[in-house]
Amino acid sequence: MRIREENRNMVLLVVTLVSAAVAGGVSLLAPTSAPVADRRPIYPPDQTSVRVVGNPFVPNTIPRER
Image (cartoon, rainbow, N blue to C red; front, side, top):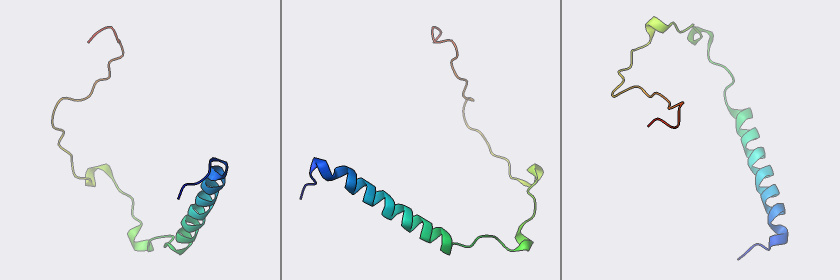
């Protein structure tokens, strides 16, 4: 079954509207906030450090040099 070229924009519009309606419905059902006990600030010293493997990325700002 092929969709005619004249009807493709209408099909895309319907798919977009249905997807937006489903996303809106799911967002209404999702919990909006966590309990107050879970809302504590996160401080950088409390986070675990991450080990970087390899050389750090340095962008080439001069395209003539490789």
